[in-house]
Image (tube, rainbow, N blue to C red; front, side, top):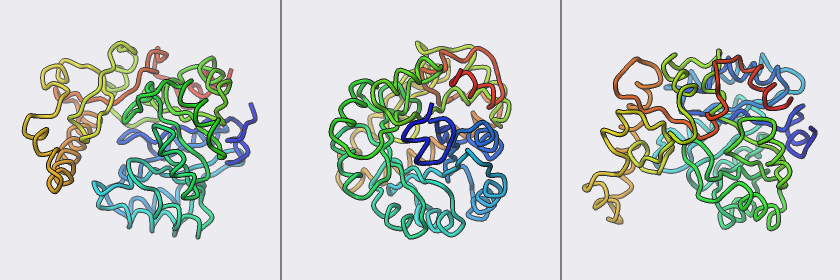
Length: 315
């Protein structure tokens, strides 16, 4: 299963365990590396810079041959911690950074000084060519089957378009829950895949058993888009609570989002509130069940270890 991604990160299998807000942790990434794939954690999963620094050091100590680890950075203005998170990651070092939701220019320029690769989330060719021009090492092609902040283009159309017009590796994100899905993405020309939702219901995940069980009990048909987490459309499981509160922005947010000077602040407030709601749902038993996931939970039939989930993807 060697591919461009395997060569780029020196990993056995061309798979990144995708960064998942509130879900990804060091225990999951350690097991991912032992299984011959890469693992990635959102920097925002850590409340303080010292916690982030401690996680980096823990993973460096645990790194094994054939595995790699990285961190995800939200690079737009909603993340007030971005510059300090980037500084700590570059000081401590890791194999790669994945950038999301904004211009990766500062991250690319700083990471390269420390020999850290940068992969950039994109949803279309326009942004793919832009990040390639900025010097990205690879493109994360976020398609319309991804969990969380997804794109609008099908895996096949997005991968083939980017492969035809870009000169750096294309890593497909979304729609992979089995080896057949992985083979399909590689067949379209992807250098590898980024897989998130199937790992939510893992033994090593620290989210509630209720969240894990939801990924077992619900399926692809139960995934809906909501604007009420980060201000950017995001996929969640359509629980009774999500149905009750709705998935559209409030009328006031809609009005303010059209105001050139105010929309940035509206988005920041929505982002902060949405993160609090999802954090409670992930870590506590609550009726406010806002569980982020993608349609690939269709393949999740029981809670498994990270290593067993990897086996499902490669065997």
